[in-house]
Length: 261
Ligand SMILES: [Zn+2]
Image 1: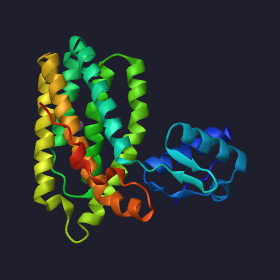
Image 2: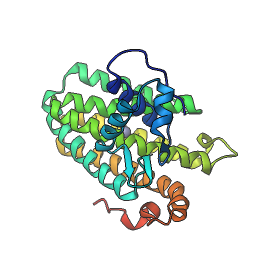
Image 3: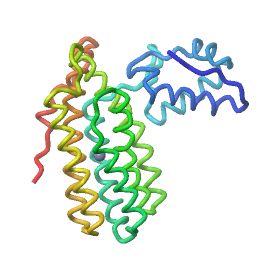
């Protein structure tokens, strides 16, 4: 567990930000226990700001307080991931509808730049981080292009949960392919090629100002990403949830797959 020491005032805000960063940057793993005393000691603050921050993270759904048991970094169930992706899809489809009448040369150029970044081959973890950033920027650009600040805020709230889901998925990538580089596998290459085609189609539809086509391509892209994440998630979460005696919600994603008509 790595936490930077705090020096400035407004302890609660700083503690909150340090903990949130640590959760979203994999410093704390999903399901990891958070020891309030230990965190306070490491950050050089009293217990109060740590307790307040934990409460705030709890209302955001990033932390779970289990009575008589302790405080833990949230773990997502398959159902959580499913619901989050459904809402994400609806928000991005709305963003497309609002963004299309406002499409300008400048926004189109921004999309083109991101597509060019996304075409770069990915052969190691560093390149993967850049790729994931460009992917996230592409979707963020769509949200900003909508010109609706409220929509952007709601989307940002969802993103924290998607980040946790991504951490689950990347943990499974590590366990799946301990011996060989995951980026060489046929599955990875196929997914990369497909994702690129989907991004190109989304941008083409936005630039052509075709609302239905843009929404259709967003739906395809987001639900395909959801299915991929559900299978990675099932792979990594099934043994853990079984051990803990919990219902393995994420263990059977195939039953939940929606048909795309
Ligand atoms: Zn994408």
